[in-house]
Amino acid sequence: MRNRKKMTGAALFVPALIMLASAAGAQQKLSTTVYFDYAFNLNNNGYVTGTDAAKALNSQFRFRRAYFRYENKVSDLLGFRLTYDADNTANLTSAALSGTPATIATKKDDKLRPYIKHLYLDYAGLISNSSLRVGMVNTITFQIAEDKWGYRSVAKTLVDGFKDVTASDIRASSADLGLNFTGMAMKELKYGASIVSGEGYSHPEYDKYKKFAGYLQFIPVAGLSVVGYVDYEPRDASNKALTYKGDLYIEMIPNLTLAGEYVAYNSDLNKNTADQKHFNVSGYSIWGVYKIILDQLNAFARFDHYMPNSTSSSKNQDLIILGLDWVPVSTTWKIQPNVWITNYADASKKTDITVQLTFFLSF
Picture (tube, rainbow, N blue to C red):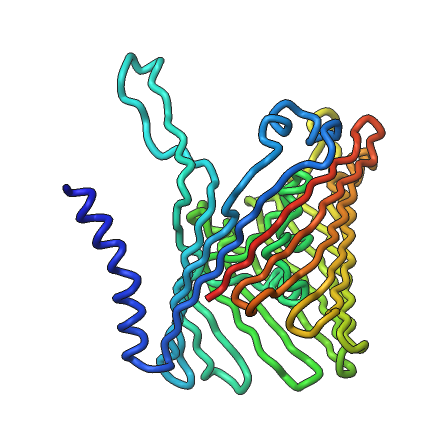
């Protein structure tokens, strides 16, 4: 009975919040975005697709993301955002407290769990054409690249997804605790700066050190944009990490967007286990999006080259993504079939080919 009351309360909460926001006027906004996939492998002898685990799960439905966002434009100068995110990351949330201490086991939680992604105030009154955000803010590391790419529903951008592809971490998160300040000095020049904890939105701050970041976006002519980004983070009292990134966006041809992104990450803590030799991490991404039928059908293609260890080129790998973006009824529902092809510099690792049928929902 108690569980039923909890479920009823939860079911009534969202409609009540929607009605409250509607009654308050257009200054408040509720939105939801969902990424849902059906995925399968086209081969069963690749480096990843050839494993027993991949073969056992070669036909999979999955919710990759579910966002719920509340925004309130309090005044012309002040706004507020709260974003809940949810995914199926396996968390250890409880312990089986039976048996002796030596046999106590943790339990894995596979439920689609919500967590806070954004929770910040947005103040636009410091100087003209600027925004100061304080709290759990979106970082400035790859926000421009993600907006230009436009297919976060299909794949993260190079920097955001580097660890997912290579297992090498360049400590870049899409949101973090701190503040960022962005603005436009003139129509040809935009800027951004931030101070954040460096741990990302999913971790508390573990030490006194902060990550400092900044970018300049130069737009010499309409349709051409160049972005330079750098961040600096002390990792401890004697070690530091630096990230350099450059983006190029070309939108001068009708219905066509071409882009390139390069990143280099240099951390004093990156050393080979065997010989303790220092290594750098780098990579680049090139992509294009073509609007075949305006507001109805797009085609996209992307090539990523990952160099996770500068001392070992055999660890390099390439990722090719090809796909379509179809709007069958309205832009709130998109169907995005896409193919991922992963090639490895190591000749002993065979190519992986995976297909995803992605459903993008936004309302």
